[in-house]
Amino acid sequence: LAAAHGERDVRHDDFWALRDVSFTVRRGESLGVIGVNGSGKSTLLKILSGALYPTVGTFHIQGRVLSLLELGTGLNPELTGRQNVINSSRLLAFPPGYATERMPQIEAFAELPDSFFDRPVKLYSSGMLVRLVFSMFACFDPDVFVIDEALSVGDVFFQQKCARRLAEMKATGVTMLFVSHDLD
Image (cartoon, rainbow, N blue to C red):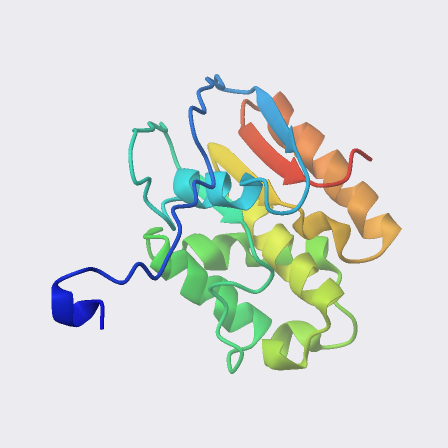
């Protein structure tokens, strides 16, 4: 009936995941964003990574940004870990041979069991996926490294290994953005 009288039927409520957010992070600095689920943390990182665009406002990032957002995003489940590393390298516009040069380092860091590096990632556990993706991105030498709680998956020894690698990356001038709902 409302449509017959020219009235619009409202089917949504405006919802702002982020509003009036402003910050600067310089080369080699780190920013941690902690908040409850639904507070806009992941939205912020997706915007900074180029996966989403802001409705209003602007942002500027200098350098190569690599993002470890949702576990397994960007991986082809039918490809092996090794093939996904090469494929990701191409999608990120790295020069030919870039991934192949870093493959031994990525494989060694990931420490996947048995021959899983050469098996389809659809067979990987969530812990194995985070090992592969973190290892790949950490060895791809980003200027800005964005991490969205992905390191909460997996064993404590790998988490500690990742923390050491993040400290090494920070010491070389990599800028880091990390979000979590957990203060620890």
